[in-house]
Amino acid sequence: MIVLPYICLLFIGIVMVASSSVYVSEAIYGNPFHFASRQIIFFIIGVLATIIALSIPSNIFLRLDWLILLGSLILLAALFFPGVGTEVNGSLRWIRIGPINVQPSEVSKLALVIYIAGYCVRRLSEINTSLGFVRPLIVLALFGLLIMSQPDLGSTLVIGALVIAVLFFAGISFLQFSLLVSLMAILAVVAIYLEPYRYIRFISFTEPFENFYGPGWQLSNALLSIGRGEWFGMGLGNGLQKNLYLPEPHTDFIFAVIVEEFGLIGGLVIIFLFSMLIFGVIKTSIKSLELGKLFQGLIAFGVGILIAIQAIFNIGVNLGILPTKGLTLPFISYGGTSLILFMFLMGMVLRINFENNTIK
Image 1 (cartoon, rainbow, N blue to C red):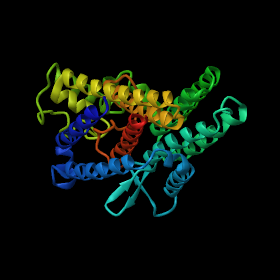
Image 2: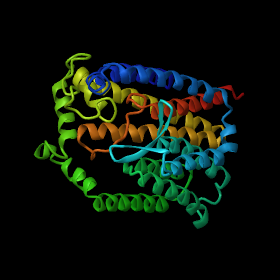
Image 3: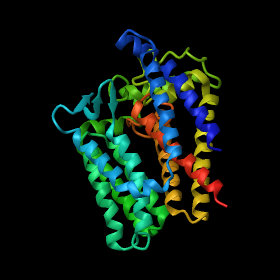
């Protein structure tokens, strides 16, 4: 339930990054396989990350959760120091280390999963009290403020939903959960309304073809790509919208390329693989809780929810169900930090699954 869909998604990711990025790579670097070759390097590093996570007893992360959180916070703050952060398309989201770009907002997802799980274990009897409930929200607010300053509303919403889901799973009341969801929704509306470009993007997604050459360009081309795929697609490598029509075909809109080349059937296969993987991860979480391993159960649950949130956001954006946001499709989209992060998290889940199965 975990290994098979995990390997399939990784394999599909490498193939589709190679297919979707051909024209973009050629136009920018003069090499049609620039992004594909880098993705293979990221994959190799990710395999090492998975092996490392598999070899570390899960309880070690409970002892190190504060250090991991602090390290992630320092990375986020470092973006704003002169000469450290790298700005791309008006967003300050990357730290360049030699040939590698590290995205601190992606690292923060790993840090918050571990920290919130550890906090709930240590303060389980207090999370329904005012003080115990507010403490993790202060940490979330600090991370959210730094990520929004980049600016990156999409990642802010993801970490907010992630933290709220883990707290609810750990036992906060339905009233507290409802208040948090309402507060996050209100803050998202305010953030969209206060920034004209976000507001225009939000409004345009309802009628993208009316703003085809403006803010609806991305979604319009994604929908054209999906429509061209019909039932069985045009065949691997034969998609047309990726030929400099569809922006970010190898990252945010790679699902549209998959559907164009493999049709509705191909898109449903991707959704099925994600569903199978998430089910397997949640099953591991429940098994951990049955064995009395709260930290491991919350970690696995957090990983499952994180994969689900990002997959739903990305696919929803490609289908025009959600406003355009710059979120990758886990294991499939191009991106070193994202791929390595998710592969490390899967290593942690596999380690937890191994520990569950070795308990006598």
